[in-house]
Length: 168
Image (tube, rainbow, N blue to C red; front, top):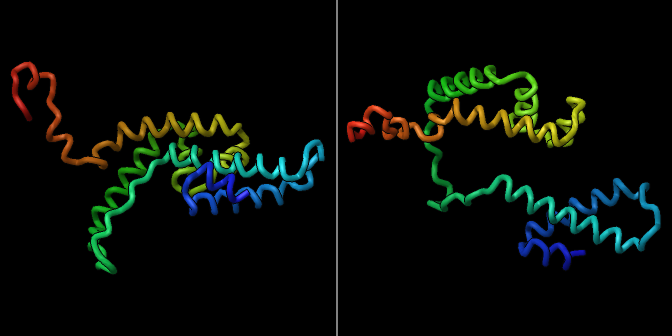
């Protein structure tokens, strides 16, 4: 099983995590095993599925490692008023979403529930959770885009300034 996970993911840490997920899944599904195939075949399939799930998750939410600037450097002090203002802006943006999009986004992105847990909580299909989150995130991206890159607004040309050949 280890070799399958390692060959599939090519990362020992990811393979170990996938293998752990697979064995938990196998334990939970042991009562459903129908003996139509060998146990090893069934376990291999579970391991492969766990690995593919990890690959899909990694592609859906790519990450970039943080630069290692130094050991135990003090954190940058945060501006509590700016943080509070940001929270209010985000809450206002969430309030603008329709309820059918807001609930899945809050459960998945804010509370950290999985898509399957959210689907069970809301009584809807997993695909519905995914599509509602995607539509809601697209709307939030338009409303909250200025938070991601506040200097971008100053560099955007209006149609009037483009016509005159000016930069803002």
